[in-house]
Length: 184
Image (cartoon, rainbow, N blue to C red; front, side, top):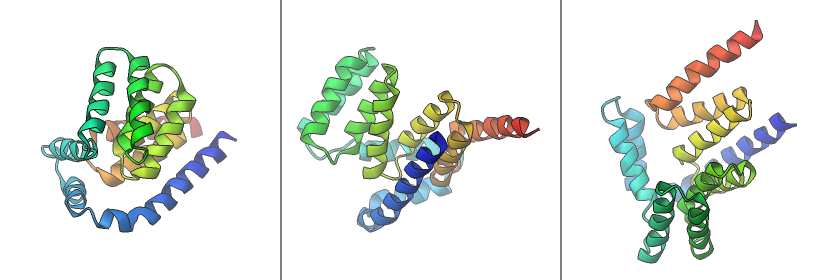
């Protein structure tokens, strides 16, 4: 049942990516950064990742950016419950801003609320199908739920966007070895 549900999520994600491509075609600078990321080497990919994340975190509204900053500060202060409040306010005022959902998903995860975290990750990926950070979070949760095949599939999606992502490369190696050992 869980495998079927995950495959439905992945299918929905793929459809979202397909329907979202015309929207992203208008975001030339971000597209260029993703192209650079795909072609980057180990020495430059982290810098490009940071540039992409900085673009994602810019809502275009100083008030929304302040809510995002407050949520992130609360997370850094070890107060995910306070962070949830800030991110929820951000989502209420800017429901199309994926970073609000991503921040809240992270806060929910740290509170041990896996279901709400997964729901927010789903929303992040619906709004921003190339959000490799949300994908990493999803893969991590799949590993924790002892679903290595699903985790492997998501890490491979991360690598399709960023072939040098060290964490994803290590996870793929680890999971392939684990799954290979299971089939014996």
